[in-house]
Length: 223
Length: 223
DNA sequence: ACCTGAACACCGTTCAAGT
DNA sequence: ACCTGAACACCGTTCAAGT
Image 1 (cartoon, rainbow over the protein chains, first blue to last red):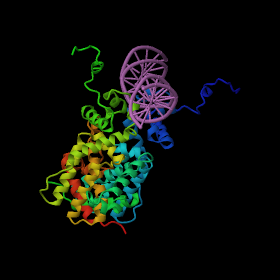
Image 2: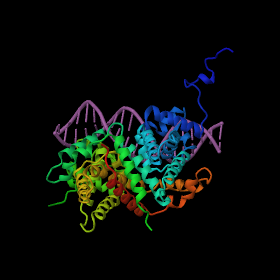
Image 3: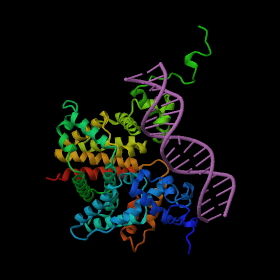
Image 4: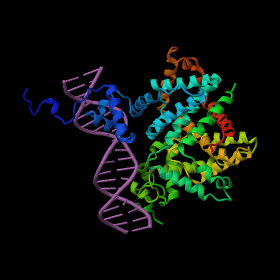
């Protein structure tokens, strides 16, 4: 019962080094993501968190992209269920808004989802939910199938644009360019500077989803 | 007239070291992009190309993101003009297709455009063109203003998904997941596996643009 | 003002060697 | 089979010092 100063548990200051498993790695990755953002979620940083070297992670994760995909699917578990009240349109918009809001917190993750197509179980659940709602609304199956892509792409891209910090400057630059647009060379921009730049992100997202849904309903797939 | 072995021009093997200007830097960046892709278009690689150290570039370019934006705007100069034949819808679709096709060659650049909003002169020209076409089609100005964003976002995101190499695997994984989807837990996915995965990118882009245009025409902006 | 060498503080990934 | 130290081959950006 005597506490020895050199017992293995206290050799390092870390509380309890968890066994290295894929689950444990993803859980640690989620923690790093929440605490420090995707930028810091590197193989090296994660290895440090798990008290090991970066090479050890490659037993469980193919590469950084796969790590990010796994984390995204984990987060996707949050947005699965949505209240069943309202019309199919309202519920459809609500699911997609909830998905986008989740990504708003991690714009860099949204960005990576735009390139590295997710294919995890929670992502499949989301697709299933969207297809069911479009089916309920009587949207022809072929249009629904292609439409789901369009809806998810819009939601993801909207979140990706929601860059936390630096590229506030980009937006300022665009705003400035639009406001300075010459009446002579860019008459339409000059005339629409207000609407072009106005509207809170939520209103734009909502309008975009409505336009998208309307278009998907009405546009036949070729052949 | 005697050729000296140590004349300044031949001290290094490079042909003619161009003066360091923003124009020259962007031109060299374009060359590196075309030859080696955006991945290799780093400050260090570019400095090497210009026969100097990376620190020198920071006099003309704020950071890597700004460099990429400048290169994109340069490429955008290519897609400006489009034949005036056909209906406004056809011309609108053609301009956006031409924009997307240009980005297809540089998916990583498309990806960066999704985050770091471009605001260069050629980008403004493109917006002006799109607004003019929507105006010609009688689309209410407020809808046109927000719609342009939607159209460019779709075109850019479609190009961004067109990842050259690695994430072919992601797509295979998604295809596999969709085909394995259980009839019991994911009936809609199982029933629509064909349409979900079918269609060449061009057909999907074209259908997406048509759905978008239809939706933009018909969906009123709030308030 | 413009340019630069050198440094700081990082990366992803591989591989031979260990257990 | 799993794990790892060490290395390879890179990054962006800053800064003091030079011209």
